[in-house]
Image 1 (tube, helix red, strand yellow):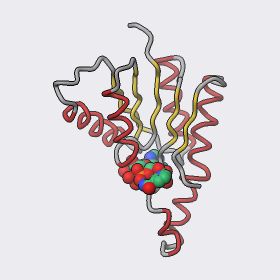
Image 2 (spheres, helix red, strand yellow; image 1 turned 45 degrees about the vertical axis):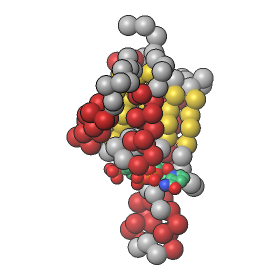
Image 3 (cartoon, protein in one colour; image 1 turned 30 degrees about the vertical axis):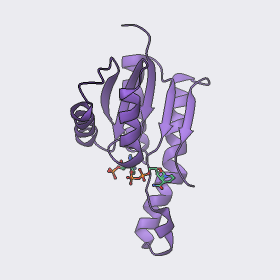
Image 4 (cartoon, protein in one colour; image 1 turned 90 degrees about the vertical axis):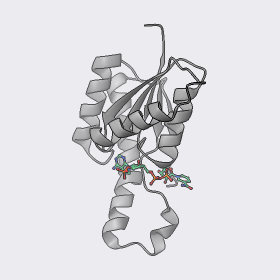
Length: 149
Ligand SMILES: NC(=O)c1ccc[n+]([C@@H]2O[C@H](COP(=O)([O-])OP(=O)(O)OC[C@H]3O[C@@H](n4cnc5c(N)ncnc54)[C@H](OP(=O)(O)O)[C@@H]3O)[C@@H](O)[C@H]2O)c1
Protein backbone atom coordinates (compact mmCIF):
# COMPACT_ATOMS: atom_id res chain seq x y z
CA UNK A 1 0.00 0.00 0.00
CA UNK A 2 1.32 3.46 -0.86
CA UNK A 3 2.12 6.01 1.86
CA UNK A 4 -0.84 7.34 3.80
CA UNK A 5 -0.93 9.93 6.53
CA UNK A 6 -2.16 8.15 9.67
CA UNK A 7 -4.67 10.34 11.52
CA UNK A 8 -5.88 9.41 15.00
CA UNK A 9 -9.10 11.24 15.80
CA UNK A 10 -10.61 10.86 19.28
CA UNK A 11 -14.32 11.32 20.03
CA UNK A 12 -15.06 10.60 16.38
CA UNK A 13 -18.57 9.23 16.84
CA UNK A 14 -20.42 12.55 17.08
CA UNK A 15 -20.26 16.32 16.75
CA UNK A 16 -17.06 17.98 15.56
CA UNK A 17 -15.13 14.69 15.63
CA UNK A 18 -17.61 12.92 13.37
CA UNK A 19 -17.74 15.82 10.90
CA UNK A 20 -13.94 16.08 10.90
CA UNK A 21 -13.61 12.36 10.20
CA UNK A 22 -16.01 12.75 7.27
CA UNK A 23 -14.03 15.68 5.86
CA UNK A 24 -10.74 13.77 6.13
CA UNK A 25 -12.34 10.69 4.56
CA UNK A 26 -13.70 12.64 1.59
CA UNK A 27 -10.55 14.72 1.14
CA UNK A 28 -8.52 14.46 -2.02
CA UNK A 29 -5.52 13.09 -0.14
CA UNK A 30 -4.00 9.85 1.10
CA UNK A 31 -5.35 9.43 4.61
CA UNK A 32 -5.89 6.48 6.90
CA UNK A 33 -8.25 7.70 9.60
CA UNK A 34 -8.30 5.86 12.90
CA UNK A 35 -11.74 6.86 14.16
CA UNK A 36 -11.68 6.40 17.93
CA UNK A 37 -14.69 6.40 20.23
CA UNK A 38 -15.33 5.34 23.82
CA UNK A 39 -16.39 1.88 22.62
CA UNK A 40 -15.66 -0.17 19.51
CA UNK A 41 -19.41 -0.36 18.83
CA UNK A 42 -19.70 3.45 18.69
CA UNK A 43 -16.57 3.76 16.54
CA UNK A 44 -17.77 1.07 14.13
CA UNK A 45 -21.24 2.61 13.84
CA UNK A 46 -19.71 6.02 13.08
CA UNK A 47 -17.31 4.59 10.48
CA UNK A 48 -20.18 2.70 8.79
CA UNK A 49 -22.32 5.82 8.82
CA UNK A 50 -19.56 7.85 7.14
CA UNK A 51 -19.14 5.16 4.48
CA UNK A 52 -22.90 5.30 3.85
CA UNK A 53 -23.04 9.09 3.76
CA UNK A 54 -20.14 9.53 1.36
CA UNK A 55 -21.67 10.29 -2.03
CA UNK A 56 -20.85 7.91 -4.86
CA UNK A 57 -19.82 11.01 -6.81
CA UNK A 58 -16.89 11.43 -4.40
CA UNK A 59 -14.93 8.21 -4.73
CA UNK A 60 -12.05 8.09 -2.28
CA UNK A 61 -9.08 5.88 -1.65
CA UNK A 62 -8.92 7.02 1.96
CA UNK A 63 -9.58 4.42 4.62
CA UNK A 64 -11.37 4.38 7.98
CA UNK A 65 -10.55 2.16 10.93
CA UNK A 66 -12.71 2.07 14.09
CA UNK A 67 -10.93 1.91 17.44
CA UNK A 68 -12.02 1.85 21.10
CA UNK A 69 -10.37 4.67 23.07
CA UNK A 70 -11.63 6.20 26.32
CA UNK A 71 -9.36 9.15 26.95
CA UNK A 72 -9.94 9.06 30.71
CA UNK A 73 -8.69 5.47 31.03
CA UNK A 74 -4.94 4.84 31.06
CA UNK A 75 -5.42 1.18 30.17
CA UNK A 76 -7.75 2.05 27.28
CA UNK A 77 -5.22 4.59 25.94
CA UNK A 78 -2.37 2.08 26.21
CA UNK A 79 -4.32 -0.71 24.53
CA UNK A 80 -5.34 1.64 21.71
CA UNK A 81 -1.79 2.88 21.20
CA UNK A 82 -0.42 -0.67 21.25
CA UNK A 83 -2.92 -1.63 18.55
CA UNK A 84 -1.99 1.35 16.39
CA UNK A 85 1.70 0.65 16.83
CA UNK A 86 1.20 -3.01 15.88
CA UNK A 87 -0.84 -2.16 12.77
CA UNK A 88 0.85 1.03 11.56
CA UNK A 89 4.02 1.61 13.57
CA UNK A 90 3.34 5.32 13.81
CA UNK A 91 0.83 8.15 14.02
CA UNK A 92 1.29 11.30 11.92
CA UNK A 93 -1.55 13.49 13.17
CA UNK A 94 -3.55 13.33 16.40
CA UNK A 95 -6.86 15.22 16.58
CA UNK A 96 -7.38 15.35 20.34
CA UNK A 97 -11.10 16.06 20.20
CA UNK A 98 -12.81 13.82 22.78
CA UNK A 99 -14.49 15.90 25.42
CA UNK A 100 -17.74 17.51 26.36
CA UNK A 101 -19.60 20.15 24.48
CA UNK A 102 -21.48 23.00 26.10
CA UNK A 103 -18.79 23.78 28.60
CA UNK A 104 -20.67 27.00 29.17
CA UNK A 105 -23.14 24.87 31.16
CA UNK A 106 -20.38 24.50 33.73
CA UNK A 107 -22.27 26.94 35.93
CA UNK A 108 -25.34 24.72 36.12
CA UNK A 109 -23.81 21.22 36.00
CA UNK A 110 -23.81 18.87 38.94
CA UNK A 111 -20.64 17.94 40.84
CA UNK A 112 -20.28 14.49 39.14
CA UNK A 113 -20.74 16.09 35.71
CA UNK A 114 -18.09 18.66 36.50
CA UNK A 115 -15.69 15.94 37.63
CA UNK A 116 -16.28 13.94 34.42
CA UNK A 117 -15.76 17.04 32.29
CA UNK A 118 -12.59 17.92 34.13
CA UNK A 119 -11.24 14.37 33.68
CA UNK A 120 -11.89 14.43 29.94
CA UNK A 121 -10.38 17.84 29.29
CA UNK A 122 -7.65 18.21 31.89
CA UNK A 123 -6.50 14.62 32.14
CA UNK A 124 -7.81 12.70 29.13
CA UNK A 125 -6.58 14.86 26.29
CA UNK A 126 -3.05 15.39 27.66
CA UNK A 127 -2.86 11.68 28.53
CA UNK A 128 -3.72 10.63 25.00
CA UNK A 129 -1.12 12.96 23.54
CA UNK A 130 1.56 11.98 26.05
CA UNK A 131 0.97 8.27 25.69
CA UNK A 132 1.06 8.48 21.91
CA UNK A 133 4.30 10.38 22.06
CA UNK A 134 5.79 7.82 24.41
CA UNK A 135 4.56 4.91 22.31
CA UNK A 136 5.81 6.24 19.00
CA UNK A 137 8.47 8.72 20.02
CA UNK A 138 6.50 10.83 17.58
CA UNK A 139 8.08 14.15 18.27
CA UNK A 140 7.20 15.02 14.71
CA UNK A 141 3.49 14.12 14.90
CA UNK A 142 1.13 17.07 14.69
CA UNK A 143 -1.27 17.24 17.62
CA UNK A 144 -4.41 19.38 17.40
CA UNK A 145 -6.69 20.00 20.39
CA UNK A 146 -10.30 21.10 20.09
CA UNK A 147 -10.83 21.35 23.83
CA UNK A 148 -11.93 24.63 25.34
CA UNK A 149 -9.92 24.14 28.52
N1 LIG B 1 -19.23 22.74 20.21
C1 LIG B 1 -18.47 23.82 20.36
O1 LIG B 1 -18.88 24.97 20.19
C2 LIG B 1 -17.01 23.66 20.71
C3 LIG B 1 -16.19 24.74 20.54
C4 LIG B 1 -14.84 24.59 20.81
C5 LIG B 1 -14.37 23.40 21.26
N2 LIG B 1 -15.19 22.37 21.48
C6 LIG B 1 -14.59 21.14 21.97
O2 LIG B 1 -14.58 20.22 20.86
C7 LIG B 1 -14.75 18.91 21.35
C8 LIG B 1 -15.94 18.25 20.66
O3 LIG B 1 -17.07 19.07 20.87
P1 LIG B 1 -18.48 18.68 20.27
O4 LIG B 1 -19.31 19.89 20.27
O5 LIG B 1 -18.29 17.93 18.99
O6 LIG B 1 -19.01 17.71 21.42
P2 LIG B 1 -19.90 16.38 21.35
O7 LIG B 1 -20.85 16.38 20.20
O8 LIG B 1 -20.45 16.21 22.73
O9 LIG B 1 -18.84 15.23 21.06
C9 LIG B 1 -17.90 14.90 22.02
C10 LIG B 1 -17.28 13.58 21.61
O10 LIG B 1 -16.29 13.25 22.57
C11 LIG B 1 -16.54 11.92 23.01
N3 LIG B 1 -16.06 11.70 24.36
C12 LIG B 1 -16.46 12.30 25.49
N4 LIG B 1 -15.80 11.78 26.54
C13 LIG B 1 -14.97 10.84 26.04
C14 LIG B 1 -14.04 9.96 26.62
N5 LIG B 1 -13.81 9.94 27.94
N6 LIG B 1 -13.32 9.14 25.80
C15 LIG B 1 -13.54 9.15 24.48
N7 LIG B 1 -14.44 9.92 23.86
C16 LIG B 1 -15.13 10.77 24.65
C17 LIG B 1 -18.06 11.75 22.93
O11 LIG B 1 -18.34 10.38 22.95
P3 LIG B 1 -19.70 9.79 23.58
O12 LIG B 1 -20.70 9.81 22.47
O13 LIG B 1 -19.32 8.41 24.01
O14 LIG B 1 -20.07 10.67 24.75
C18 LIG B 1 -18.32 12.44 21.61
O15 LIG B 1 -18.03 11.59 20.53
C19 LIG B 1 -14.92 19.01 22.86
O16 LIG B 1 -13.65 18.77 23.45
C20 LIG B 1 -15.38 20.45 23.06
O17 LIG B 1 -15.04 20.94 24.31
C21 LIG B 1 -16.51 22.46 21.18
